[in-house]
Image 1 (cartoon, each protein chain N blue to C red):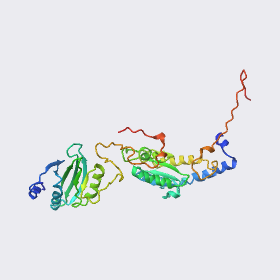
Image 2: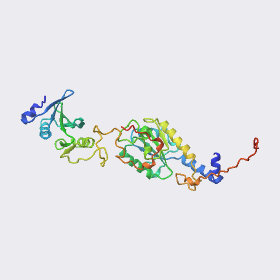
Image 3: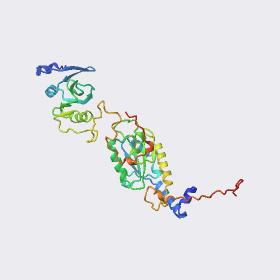
Image 4: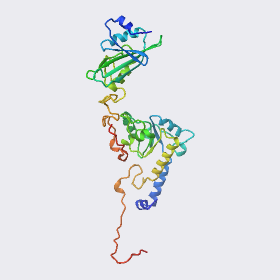
Length: 169
Length: 191
């Protein structure tokens, strides 16, 4: 059974906050520790990065949280690794050097939340056009988007009879 | 043919030529299938053996806009894809018609969100909208028949050219004769 205490044996000054996500153990680590901890986790068998995603916690301290879901294919164990960052300084170290599969997932988190991954080889937007100025999955982004943020071609051909009024959300 | 058309036409020969050209066009509408998403599957069925569209004249689905005259937009159009759809539409030669297939192209469908265009009529002139998610292939056949009716009412020779798609508004002039009523007491009986 894997436990985060084994990480503490390796790095004695390491502190973490235990997180239980529906029965799966996880740890919230600080930005300075995450690269070393991730490296150690990969060497102790967690070779598969199953998922990496962002969360907007909508709180003043540690607004954005990036979660990595790791799996050990030999013992079939899964753990979560979480990092947080503020809105004022949204920088998080990139784990692309450890798991290459984190590349596109971190690009998606950058596109949707604006979290900047330091050390990422190719940090650009994934789904929205490159000139898009906003981050859509933040809690303060309206559902219907900002009108005019993505230009429509030839809007003069619009059929004004059928314009659906926006609820202004 | 109504009274309006009889006044507008320049004569028997041009209206018969209009009819011939319209008959030829509507029975050979070659679609450009812009199959973006799930509606493309129903469009494939619409071209398949059961709901055969080649019996309506759309024998070939030309995947090149330069060789087609009917654009069927089948699938969700996002803002990023909108400029591609518009480019395809611009590359089609006149006369051209557009079918908006499915609810995603008609009004955004179930995607009421920042990335999906809420109706392709925001940047394309659309002739026929089909509801459905996806619409049954016979709905698409009905839409094709509605486009055929629209083609049949076109007046290519009356406009002076058989190439252009829009009638120039200044050519449609209906002479109006005003007969003043005589100021006569009593009822006026016209015989």
